[in-house]
Amino acid sequence: MAKITRTKSVPQNMRTIYDTIVGLTDHFCRDHLDDKYRELAQHMAAALCRKRTSPVTSGQPRTWACAIIYVLGQINFLSDRSTKPYMTTAELCTAFGVGQSTASAKARVISQMLNTHQLDPKWSLPSLLDANPLVWMAEVNGIVVDLPYATRGPGDRIP
Picture (cartoon, rainbow, N blue to C red):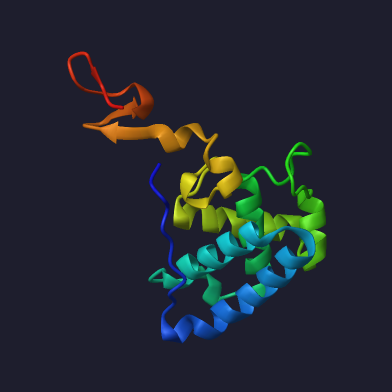
């Protein structure tokens, strides 16, 4: 499986906003989640700051920080009791002091802007990545192929 590369580079004019949002997400992840969520949140904040018309230039940084964790939680099943770490959406929003409807609206903006979805390999925790079936799929000439069963030619399986 190929390693997913991400960058934390941010345009100079967005640096202050990025630092503010990441300060909030870092603190939250340290207190409630883990370092893997912290890393993903930093990368997601950077991706949002690099957008040509960045949505994080308007609104409260704590709202965007909450929405980033909200989106990552949706992708990684944070509100599923069988996962570790576990936290409900209500607890997440309360910890940031943001209303659930506001966090949900901002999370929707982030999801649409970054084109995220549940089990998104780009934003999955490393612990969930190996069991993620989407990691093993590829589109070849418009057809989705299950890589473990792909062939190079007639009867030749790709090892």
